Image (cartoon, rainbow, N blue to C red):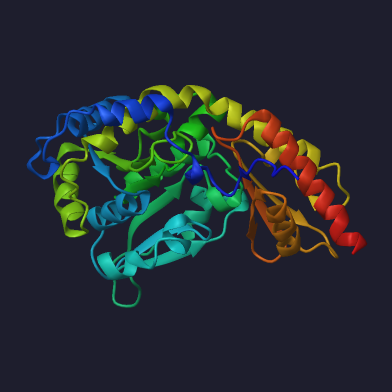
Length: 350
């Protein structure tokens, strides 16, 4: 029996570097980046700063490191950080906010993972004798565990204006900001202009093998470079990685609409099932999170799909996450939808 092709839709982190990236990596001009002598890293940082309209940028190994450096830049120990209750810094960054910055996360649930000023304002606390003061507002765009939702511009503009009035910095976890920009047909400079710092990933939908960027003012990025070293992020001849990052930054955003179309394709197919709860209007980018009605078990559907060489993941006890990306063709996505629908039916009949 012929083994079917493996289709991995657990995350866009599973993407492999393109042929052009591999070639660029093999031929990259390198130097010691800790000495600021790697020309390819320098070129990547300069280009990232230009695209986001910032004075400077910093290449970091991971998005987590970029976020945590930004948090440390903007806060002091004993302060609170306001973020959405499903945010990456809260759920997936190993409590580093507490360990490295000495701060507490003030988690606020928001519809579809999108914080508004109405959500934020009631939990802002000034410096005083009874409460930890607010030091930072942290936003996520797109909102990963809320199904890749995109922050509408009027919502984030209101946050920027009010945060500035209160003297509060805003950091954006823009791991998938290019997906958000694709969905809104805007450029990332306009979408992030009011944030003090922005982190974005090169290694998700943009397909680089490793790396993220942190952008901001020259003063902040100079301090960020010191903090990167403190976290073990001085990577020496990192131009081999930055070469792939340059291609990710320049070429890959132009194809993200394909991933969004494939996500909508899968979602449309899934909504045909009576056992799936999914509002198609919420599938804005490349992430689908859908809920299964009893007696269907999310864990059993995921396990059965894996046997058939489709990798997807559970979110909580009753939901499944599917993420489209460059390594999954439209045919792959059509086949994935068929498998999921079949295994939903199979789980009922067993």
